[in-house]
Image (cartoon, rainbow, N blue to C red; front, top):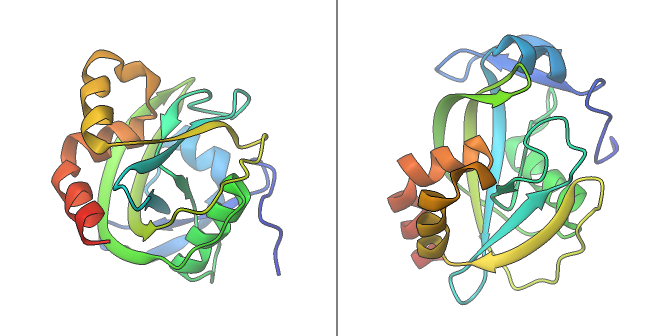
Length: 184
């Protein structure tokens, strides 16, 4: 089994077109420098009170360091099933595993600063869990459960505190996220 994490300069991502058809692979850092479209996964874990588990990214991440984001995110490796990739990222970032349900796909492009661009076709997964987390310090510096309404309200006054992809989800998919939180 591959390790849960690789150094950012060794990680490979899957390049795709807007229909999620694989076009090849490339190094993760190069893809983010060039802004090329690639496949990604995101996880939203809600507790039994309907609150979302969010994480504050580690201070030394290569982009979006110290910003708040959804539960977990990352990139599937070549030939890795999407759910397996999402569960790998849950373990690598927060130290727990959970069965997941695929909710929807979305595509976005956003400037992350420092000459880096996120241009991702994302497969968004959901789960309900009250498990205790064990954040991995190289990935996550803090976690908390918070309602989507509270996050959305805070986003309006503290936008720069949130990762660009999380801003995108809250701006464009808030209803989807609320619907999934209610049905879990």
